[in-house]
Length: 67
Image (cartoon, rainbow, N blue to C red; front, side, top):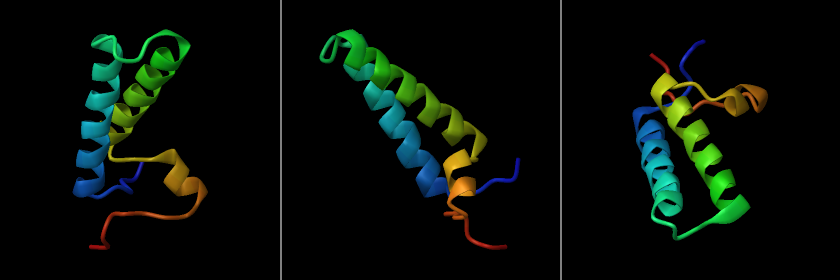
């Protein structure tokens, strides 16, 4: 997998992931919607760690500056 995310993009995704998981753990959002937020947060965290977003490939875009 070739990286296609900039460091700023990765940081924003990581922060959003932590926020979404916190909303569920803090019982601010519960039930099915809370579980959906946790799954979305985990997806954001994984893509942030890898620096690769499959949707960017699908739409032929990248936030990573060319070298």
